[in-house]
Image (cartoon, rainbow, N blue to C red; front, side):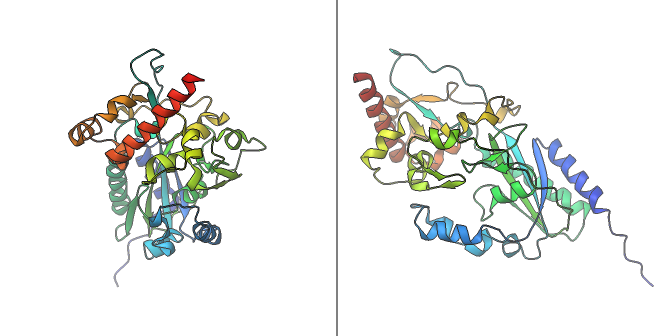
Length: 326
């Protein structure tokens, strides 16, 4: 009679996986089950109402996005990780310094986070398969059809705040997320507790009223969407409200009380290539493709092609010029 190998203690395996994740440079790690999304109907309504704007890809692979076990057949668990990307910034040049400066969202100031996180996730996935041979794994960072914010909240990494960002009470919301979906049936962690309370600073601070209600975002009004995802013309009333944001927007995170004591990232790859978090928009007008490639090599900012970046630069320059003339 052939004896099958003893089943590993899955609590111990989970602890080993979390330890390995921390060794790989992840600041937070937790385990969620791989059950379908609780927000499936809401997500369908959000898409159908047009609030995704021109992000047609969000409607594709709907079943996979709302059920990890559809994306990875036999999935039982999701190992959710987060990396703190908060870095201190130098003061931007004060007038009359050369040229108007446009702000860049913090997540895009360092090297491309996909290239930072994905190799580490693959190492973590290899480790899971070593601990439990025969296990299937699949990694995701942002671009995969995974409801990563909901899963991170279920894994205890942080709660989804009223601004729809994941917030951790120790680190805040400057978090880059990643996942390893696996067929290994790990014990899930306790979900994060929502600690937004009665606070509505993010809602009140949003210049375009993109946060239409607590926990609800109309992407069509969001400055991050308008400056990164939206390729066409931007309505005049929204152009004014973009202010000096060249790429993305951090307003709802900047005002969040949970970010008032944000820790500084220790990952050198996340140190800003624009130390003040801003760029001289007039320089961008003269960029050609070579200038663009050289300045943004290895940056997540390459999500935006040069014509769109120059469109944003024109809007910022006009807004700053208009403000200075008042």
